[in-house]
Amino acid sequence: MGGGGLEFNVTHSGMIALVAISDGGPIGVDVEEHRALADPAAFARRFFSPGEAEAVRADPAALFRWWCRKEAWLKAQGVGLRMPLGELDVREPPPGWLMVDLDVAAGYSAAVVREGGPAEIRLLDYSADSTRAGDSAIARRISR
Image (cartoon, rainbow, N blue to C red):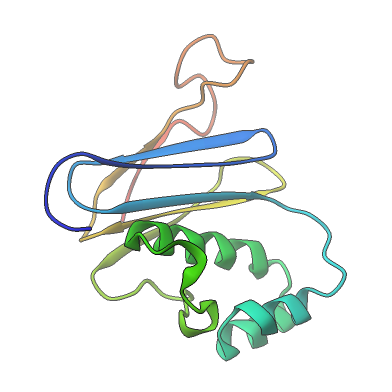
């Protein structure tokens, strides 16, 4: 964490892979293909903060979005899933962190988290259907 050269993070799920690169501090990225869960509320009670779990009970679609935020932040911290997940509430970015939900494809959730303030985040599609980087609708710049 902190301070210096180029940092990167990699994630994949289903048919999507993402690489996040930062020259300004720690970065984490996660993507998850949506899948049916027998009981999303029970999953949320086990792995989410009480506030997040209640929100998932009210809106099950939030589950994968917040899971991606949570995992991306933990990866940026360098702790992986060793931290008790219920102690981290990602409905809002932790102080001092940029947290952006990414719209990568239907049926997927993704997030990137970077230490520090606003930064440019650029997504490039290098999928088999594109002839060169940036041909798809997901190639864009996001500043928050």
